[in-house]
Length: 257
DNA sequence: ATGGTAGCCTTGCTA
View 1 (tube, rainbow, N blue to C red):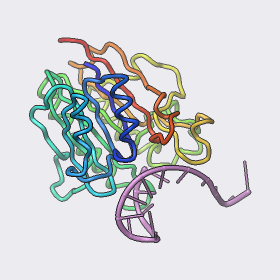
View 2: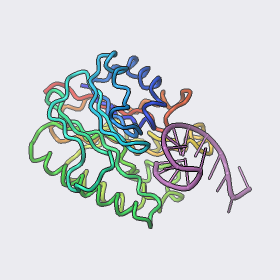
View 3: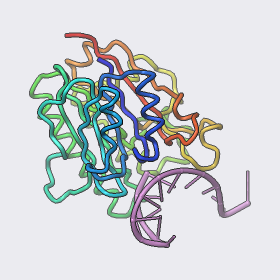
Protein backbone atom coordinates (compact mmCIF):
# COMPACT_ATOMS: atom_id res chain seq x y z
CA UNK A 1 0.00 0.00 0.00
CA UNK A 2 1.52 3.32 -1.05
CA UNK A 3 0.78 6.17 1.35
CA UNK A 4 1.66 9.75 0.39
CA UNK A 5 1.53 13.14 2.08
CA UNK A 6 1.38 16.56 0.42
CA UNK A 7 0.83 20.05 1.80
CA UNK A 8 -0.99 21.56 -1.19
CA UNK A 9 -1.40 25.17 0.06
CA UNK A 10 -5.09 25.45 -0.99
CA UNK A 11 -6.82 22.48 -2.64
CA UNK A 12 -8.83 24.79 -4.92
CA UNK A 13 -5.73 26.56 -6.24
CA UNK A 14 -3.90 23.22 -6.58
CA UNK A 15 -6.69 21.02 -7.97
CA UNK A 16 -5.15 20.46 -11.44
CA UNK A 17 -1.73 19.69 -9.92
CA UNK A 18 -3.16 17.16 -7.46
CA UNK A 19 -5.41 15.48 -10.04
CA UNK A 20 -2.46 15.13 -12.41
CA UNK A 21 -0.21 13.69 -9.72
CA UNK A 22 -2.84 11.16 -8.64
CA UNK A 23 -3.44 10.08 -12.24
CA UNK A 24 0.30 9.64 -12.75
CA UNK A 25 1.28 7.94 -9.46
CA UNK A 26 -1.94 6.27 -8.26
CA UNK A 27 -1.29 6.33 -4.50
CA UNK A 28 -3.52 4.09 -2.37
CA UNK A 29 -3.79 6.79 0.31
CA UNK A 30 -3.02 10.50 -0.10
CA UNK A 31 -2.92 12.75 2.97
CA UNK A 32 -3.39 16.45 2.19
CA UNK A 33 -2.70 19.49 4.35
CA UNK A 34 -3.48 23.20 4.12
CA UNK A 35 -6.57 22.58 2.03
CA UNK A 36 -7.77 26.04 3.13
CA UNK A 37 -11.51 25.47 2.70
CA UNK A 38 -14.49 24.27 4.67
CA UNK A 39 -15.44 20.62 4.26
CA UNK A 40 -18.49 21.43 2.13
CA UNK A 41 -16.31 23.43 -0.29
CA UNK A 42 -13.77 20.62 -0.79
CA UNK A 43 -13.80 19.50 -4.47
CA UNK A 44 -14.66 15.89 -3.60
CA UNK A 45 -16.41 15.01 -6.88
CA UNK A 46 -13.25 15.56 -8.91
CA UNK A 47 -11.41 12.98 -6.80
CA UNK A 48 -14.32 10.58 -6.68
CA UNK A 49 -14.34 10.57 -10.47
CA UNK A 50 -10.76 9.22 -10.29
CA UNK A 51 -11.93 6.45 -7.95
CA UNK A 52 -10.97 8.02 -4.62
CA UNK A 53 -12.90 8.35 -1.40
CA UNK A 54 -12.58 11.64 0.47
CA UNK A 55 -12.43 12.25 4.23
CA UNK A 56 -11.93 15.88 5.18
CA UNK A 57 -11.98 18.39 8.02
CA UNK A 58 -11.72 22.03 7.14
CA UNK A 59 -12.19 25.68 8.05
CA UNK A 60 -12.34 28.87 6.04
CA UNK A 61 -9.03 30.26 4.71
CA UNK A 62 -6.61 28.39 6.97
CA UNK A 63 -5.46 24.89 7.83
CA UNK A 64 -7.63 21.95 6.73
CA UNK A 65 -6.58 18.32 6.23
CA UNK A 66 -7.94 15.45 4.13
CA UNK A 67 -7.33 11.82 3.31
CA UNK A 68 -8.04 10.53 -0.20
CA UNK A 69 -8.09 6.76 -0.61
CA UNK A 70 -8.97 3.99 -3.04
CA UNK A 71 -10.41 1.91 -0.21
CA UNK A 72 -13.20 3.16 1.96
CA UNK A 73 -12.09 4.75 5.22
CA UNK A 74 -13.14 3.03 8.44
CA UNK A 75 -13.37 4.50 11.96
CA UNK A 76 -12.73 8.11 10.92
CA UNK A 77 -11.61 10.39 13.75
CA UNK A 78 -11.59 14.12 12.97
CA UNK A 79 -9.57 16.32 15.33
CA UNK A 80 -6.66 15.59 17.66
CA UNK A 81 -7.85 14.65 21.17
CA UNK A 82 -6.80 16.61 24.23
CA UNK A 83 -8.34 20.07 23.81
CA UNK A 84 -12.06 20.42 23.13
CA UNK A 85 -11.64 24.18 22.64
CA UNK A 86 -9.12 23.82 19.79
CA UNK A 87 -11.08 24.51 16.59
CA UNK A 88 -8.16 24.48 14.15
CA UNK A 89 -8.58 21.78 11.48
CA UNK A 90 -5.21 20.05 11.65
CA UNK A 91 -5.80 16.33 12.22
CA UNK A 92 -7.81 13.48 10.72
CA UNK A 93 -7.25 9.77 11.20
CA UNK A 94 -8.82 6.66 9.66
CA UNK A 95 -8.16 3.00 8.85
CA UNK A 96 -7.50 1.65 5.34
CA UNK A 97 -7.19 -2.10 5.04
CA UNK A 98 -5.15 -3.03 8.13
CA UNK A 99 -3.29 0.29 8.39
CA UNK A 100 -4.32 3.29 10.48
CA UNK A 101 -3.32 6.60 8.83
CA UNK A 102 -3.31 10.16 10.16
CA UNK A 103 -3.07 13.33 8.05
CA UNK A 104 -1.32 15.94 10.22
CA UNK A 105 -0.82 19.69 9.82
CA UNK A 106 1.27 20.56 12.84
CA UNK A 107 1.24 24.24 13.85
CA UNK A 108 4.09 26.35 12.41
CA UNK A 109 4.76 28.14 15.70
CA UNK A 110 6.31 31.34 14.33
CA UNK A 111 6.99 33.89 15.51
CA UNK A 112 8.56 32.36 18.61
CA UNK A 113 7.66 34.65 21.52
CA UNK A 114 4.00 34.89 20.57
CA UNK A 115 1.20 32.58 21.69
CA UNK A 116 1.72 30.62 18.46
CA UNK A 117 4.81 28.86 19.82
CA UNK A 118 3.37 27.47 23.06
CA UNK A 119 0.34 26.38 21.01
CA UNK A 120 2.69 24.38 18.79
CA UNK A 121 4.35 22.72 21.80
CA UNK A 122 1.01 21.91 23.43
CA UNK A 123 -0.25 20.45 20.15
CA UNK A 124 2.86 18.27 19.94
CA UNK A 125 2.27 17.00 23.47
CA UNK A 126 -1.29 16.06 22.45
CA UNK A 127 0.16 14.24 19.44
CA UNK A 128 2.59 12.40 21.72
CA UNK A 129 -0.29 11.23 23.91
CA UNK A 130 -2.29 10.14 20.85
CA UNK A 131 0.78 8.23 19.62
CA UNK A 132 0.99 6.40 22.96
CA UNK A 133 -2.64 5.29 22.57
CA UNK A 134 -2.04 4.14 19.00
CA UNK A 135 1.10 2.22 20.01
CA UNK A 136 -0.85 0.44 22.75
CA UNK A 137 -3.15 -0.95 20.05
CA UNK A 138 -0.13 -2.71 18.46
CA UNK A 139 -1.48 -2.05 14.96
CA UNK A 140 0.36 -0.85 11.89
CA UNK A 141 -0.01 2.94 11.58
CA UNK A 142 1.46 5.84 9.63
CA UNK A 143 1.43 9.42 10.96
CA UNK A 144 1.85 11.45 7.77
CA UNK A 145 1.95 15.16 7.24
CA UNK A 146 3.52 18.58 7.47
CA UNK A 147 5.18 18.51 10.90
CA UNK A 148 6.72 21.98 10.54
CA UNK A 149 9.84 20.43 12.12
CA UNK A 150 13.33 20.02 10.65
CA UNK A 151 14.48 17.06 12.78
CA UNK A 152 18.22 17.85 12.45
CA UNK A 153 20.58 20.37 10.85
CA UNK A 154 20.85 17.93 7.91
CA UNK A 155 17.25 18.83 7.09
CA UNK A 156 17.88 22.59 6.64
CA UNK A 157 19.77 24.42 3.89
CA UNK A 158 21.06 27.05 6.36
CA UNK A 159 21.10 25.62 9.91
CA UNK A 160 22.72 28.69 11.47
CA UNK A 161 20.26 31.14 9.92
CA UNK A 162 17.31 28.98 11.00
CA UNK A 163 18.61 28.04 14.46
CA UNK A 164 16.03 30.05 16.42
CA UNK A 165 13.12 29.49 14.03
CA UNK A 166 10.14 27.53 15.41
CA UNK A 167 10.82 24.80 12.81
CA UNK A 168 14.41 24.22 13.93
CA UNK A 169 15.02 25.39 17.48
CA UNK A 170 16.07 22.80 20.04
CA UNK A 171 12.83 22.88 22.03
CA UNK A 172 10.90 22.00 18.85
CA UNK A 173 13.33 19.21 17.96
CA UNK A 174 13.14 17.83 21.51
CA UNK A 175 9.35 17.66 21.27
CA UNK A 176 9.56 15.90 17.90
CA UNK A 177 12.14 13.45 19.24
CA UNK A 178 9.95 12.71 22.25
CA UNK A 179 7.34 11.42 19.77
CA UNK A 180 9.71 9.57 17.43
CA UNK A 181 11.55 7.96 20.35
CA UNK A 182 8.37 6.31 21.57
CA UNK A 183 9.28 3.82 18.85
CA UNK A 184 8.40 5.38 15.49
CA UNK A 185 10.43 5.24 12.28
CA UNK A 186 11.04 8.18 9.92
CA UNK A 187 10.33 6.27 6.71
CA UNK A 188 12.38 8.53 4.44
CA UNK A 189 15.55 8.20 6.52
CA UNK A 190 15.48 4.39 6.30
CA UNK A 191 16.45 4.68 2.64
CA UNK A 192 18.15 8.10 2.39
CA UNK A 193 20.98 8.94 4.80
CA UNK A 194 22.45 11.83 2.82
CA UNK A 195 21.93 15.38 4.14
CA UNK A 196 20.12 18.26 2.44
CA UNK A 197 17.16 16.50 0.88
CA UNK A 198 14.06 18.64 1.17
CA UNK A 199 10.26 18.57 0.90
CA UNK A 200 9.57 22.34 1.10
CA UNK A 201 11.02 25.37 -0.68
CA UNK A 202 9.71 28.86 0.13
CA UNK A 203 8.11 30.84 -2.69
CA UNK A 204 10.36 33.78 -1.87
CA UNK A 205 13.91 34.71 -2.81
CA UNK A 206 14.37 32.00 -5.44
CA UNK A 207 14.46 29.25 -2.83
CA UNK A 208 13.46 26.51 -5.30
CA UNK A 209 16.07 27.16 -8.05
CA UNK A 210 18.75 27.59 -5.36
CA UNK A 211 17.60 24.41 -3.54
CA UNK A 212 17.20 26.41 -0.33
CA UNK A 213 14.79 23.94 1.22
CA UNK A 214 13.66 22.25 4.41
CA UNK A 215 12.61 18.67 5.14
CA UNK A 216 9.47 19.15 7.22
CA UNK A 217 7.02 16.64 5.70
CA UNK A 218 7.37 13.25 7.34
CA UNK A 219 5.88 9.75 7.46
CA UNK A 220 6.33 8.30 10.97
CA UNK A 221 5.67 4.57 11.16
CA UNK A 222 4.70 2.29 14.04
CA UNK A 223 6.90 -0.79 14.55
CA UNK A 224 4.27 -2.96 12.86
CA UNK A 225 4.29 -0.67 9.80
CA UNK A 226 8.08 -0.25 9.78
CA UNK A 227 8.50 -4.04 9.63
CA UNK A 228 6.70 -3.94 6.28
CA UNK A 229 8.37 -0.78 4.88
CA UNK A 230 9.47 -1.33 1.27
CA UNK A 231 10.50 2.16 0.17
CA UNK A 232 10.13 5.89 0.69
CA UNK A 233 10.76 8.86 -1.60
CA UNK A 234 10.36 12.59 -2.00
CA UNK A 235 8.87 13.33 -5.44
CA UNK A 236 10.32 16.71 -6.39
CA UNK A 237 8.46 16.77 -9.71
CA UNK A 238 5.37 18.72 -8.60
CA UNK A 239 7.43 21.51 -6.99
CA UNK A 240 8.93 22.42 -10.37
CA UNK A 241 5.59 22.77 -12.15
CA UNK A 242 3.50 25.84 -12.93
CA UNK A 243 1.47 27.18 -10.01
CA UNK A 244 3.16 24.71 -7.63
CA UNK A 245 2.59 24.31 -3.93
CA UNK A 246 5.63 25.29 -1.86
CA UNK A 247 5.70 21.64 -0.65
CA UNK A 248 6.18 18.49 -2.73
CA UNK A 249 4.78 14.99 -2.09
CA UNK A 250 6.53 12.42 0.11
CA UNK A 251 5.45 8.77 0.04
CA UNK A 252 6.22 5.35 1.46
CA UNK A 253 5.32 1.81 0.43
CA UNK A 254 4.05 -0.64 3.06
CA UNK A 255 4.07 -4.28 1.98
CA UNK A 256 1.40 -6.87 2.82
CA UNK A 257 1.20 -8.24 6.36
C1' DA B 1 20.76 44.15 -1.22
C1' DT B 2 17.33 44.78 5.17
C1' DG B 3 14.46 42.47 -0.26
C1' DG B 4 11.26 38.47 -1.94
C1' DT B 5 5.89 35.06 -3.25
C1' DA B 6 1.44 32.91 -2.78
C1' DG B 7 -3.39 32.33 -1.16
C1' DC B 8 -7.10 33.64 1.46
C1' DC B 9 -10.27 37.33 2.58
C1' DT B 10 -9.25 39.93 7.21
C1' DT B 11 -6.62 44.92 1.29
C1' DG B 12 -3.69 42.12 6.81
C1' DC B 13 -2.65 37.59 8.13
C1' DT B 14 -0.44 33.23 7.60
C1' DA B 15 3.17 30.72 5.84
